[in-house]
Length: 338
Image (cartoon, rainbow, N blue to C red; front, side):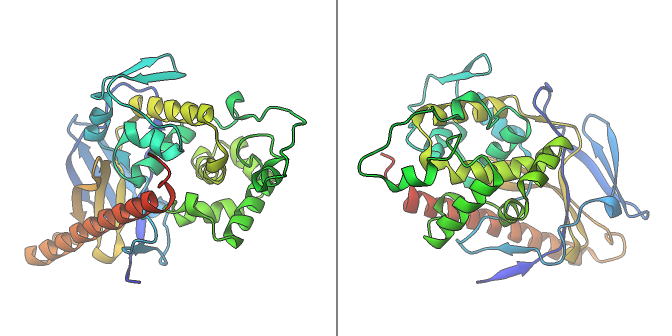
């Protein structure tokens, strides 16, 4: 497996579901001597980002360019992608129902239901699901996810009934239940639903107890809660009925149509190249919006051009690897979708 080690620093944008304008483009970005990024946007607003005070992913981050996992950055959705969704003649009727006039959507699986409207690869599926959970457009406590109370038992007893009979919802709704389901699926080599989910999401899910999860909710750490909820939801994906899948699809679509970010862009620091890279996600994958180098005034132009080419190549490799994961996922798991 070929891996390229990168230390990155992520500026995670604040997301809001109700703003009316999309993110302005960057007109200038400068790395100051104070180890801060000075960013100016096309609307003349300016921001100073304190690089030292931002969250670091650590020195052990790897970008996997094979077809075994997805590289995930919590970047903004590009205006092109938002327009792509809105131009599909989506007609919203309240917050609960979205109908599409021009698309025939299959509700056999969660993926088929969302992909028909969202397009893009699996990375869009993850980003949009996480955003809908984080923005609380999609709530896993919605009544539609609650299993009906019944004394009915299948004869003969099915494996799925044995696994889920104590579940209050159509997904494992506590950390104890969800982690038990994960371990059983791992033992059975049946974690297809989590293929492509960022490794750190799964690690966070496994490391978090129910009491810690509830503290995250109480402290409004919705980004972390959404990452855990994504794993829980996907662990229950094969047990979802059509009604639940329709509900999730409409909520995700509504969240994306309403999607907006505050004016501050997403920036990733490639420490190995002394580069601050503003990035977003369009319909084809990650794209580079702007690059600035901390030592840009002291090295040759040829050196900077070489680094830029390397970073562009890395992003290209990431998009291609993510696409391979997407294709593999379709081939392995969604063969039953006609």
